[in-house]
Image 1 (cartoon, helix red, strand yellow):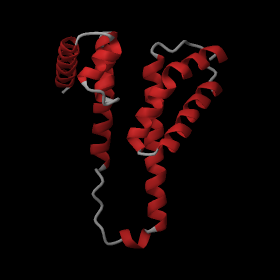
Image 2 (tube, helix red, strand yellow):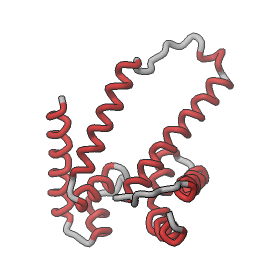
Image 3 (cartoon, one colour):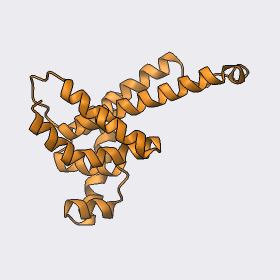
Image 4 (spheres, one colour):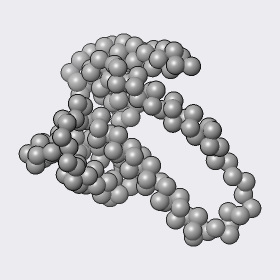
Length: 166
């Protein structure tokens, strides 16, 4: 990915991704480090094909880094207090449930990808950024009712697509 494109991507989406990460991990400093990690990964990529939806791609990397962060943090806690955890029953889902959950996430991602761009943007801003309908309307310069209608359609689409696959 050329440097100018990467810089433009950072300027356009970096602050938004940082806020997303800060909400997920509750630490602004770690969120900023993870934003830098995202863009370092992009810089190291030898991407031949252009990325269709750079914003969605950045969120995917961010979500993966959040999962990695919690895995590392959880592993560190186990190493530090293993004796305390010995008497506690394992409540983690079994392997089958984990596979089913991953499949459901992939199906949901496909359903989101199928949405028209504006509807997908509204859905992501509300569900993943945590913005209210009013905040989304203001950010996108559209009526709050439009946001509500698009969210209802997005949720119905996701519900229908997940039901079809079952």
